[in-house]
Image 1 (spheres, protein in one colour):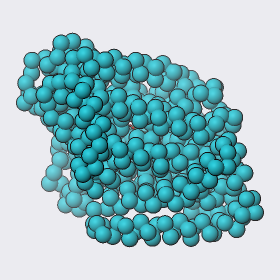
Image 2: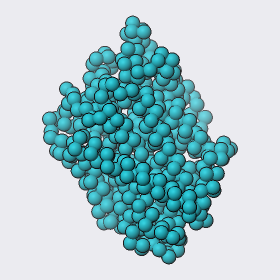
Image 3: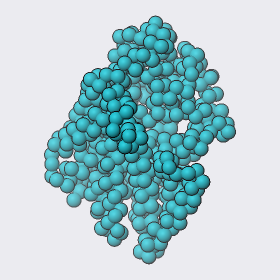
Image 4: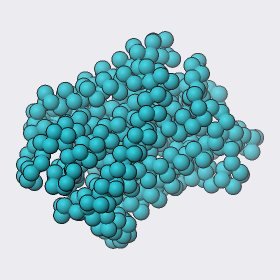
Length: 481
Ligand code: PHE
């Protein structure tokens, strides 16, 4: 059943997982969410969630991949058989595939905007344009379905090409060039921000912790963001984990992924806010922070066109290394299950996701409001697709934590984690109880109808449910312990 692909080097998994994790989530979403939620307090919750919930689930997800050595769907089928659990756990694979498909559809549209801005920066088109002008140029981009479709097509085709070439010649080779270049550009942008902008203001904005600044909504957004940024709960990490050689330590690798991903988000935040504060602009712009506020800051600064252009190339590269990890799990499944060639499998996944992406394209212009879709679902198709992924990712993470925490045996986990008994116990406690409860909060946030007071109540039900689920596994588990 398995295709037995393995990464060429011991460190390639780390490279690939960092490539998946570092993306629009770090460069675009993290800074604007931090800006909207008052800075330091948001970061505190975000970092706590990464370490208490993100890393344990990251370990769990790599473990399921490496143990099954298959794409998430086939892998979960294999694991439910070998562990004699209900076949409904296969839903982990299916949920993951659905999320990957949905995320790719809008991720590619937004990444496409960075193509447009790379051009605007290098050609100097925004130099001497005032704030209103920069805002108008962003609005004009969003108003054009033709342009958005063009960029969406270019971006998704480039991602498809890399995955189509295979895990060695495409993904590995691509990442080996891409990732080091991205780190260099990030450092250049940071140094530029430090010299020209206001690094002190940026640092005090990001690292002054005032919990009173944070609303409940901000709390939940911080937790949701920590999932998205680590690419958790949708099979990308599981698919890459399936190619990880048996001897590499899973615990250390998971820590490294989380540390690098967090560091990139912080450095990007420092660089972006140095420029924004240096130009005297508002950090709380929301999603427009990268596409309106930042270009304006670059436009006002010496050498800004060049560094700005490099910055948008960084955004594009980081986005592409993430989007390939969205294609891989589904493509690998089609190859395993239907015996397709890799290019065929990639083409099917990408063309379907591209077509769905057209709904996102239209959500910014022709279908921005007042359509039948709005009447039925109360939001644009893009907002609806994003909402679905906000539900699917935590749900997938929850199921992964429960399955790895309760169904895998002590011996299996120890073989993968290569750690001592104490770390094992900490990890197991976190995936069995803490992660499911935390995820329940994130999950409930996406359901607007849930009243505030119901959230802790449902959280408690989830913890009890985790116990109940656990008891059904404990019978065989205890023989191993
Ligand atoms: N982690 C990526 C980012 O921060 C997004 C992503 C989510 C990629 C899920 C793959 C899977 O941009």
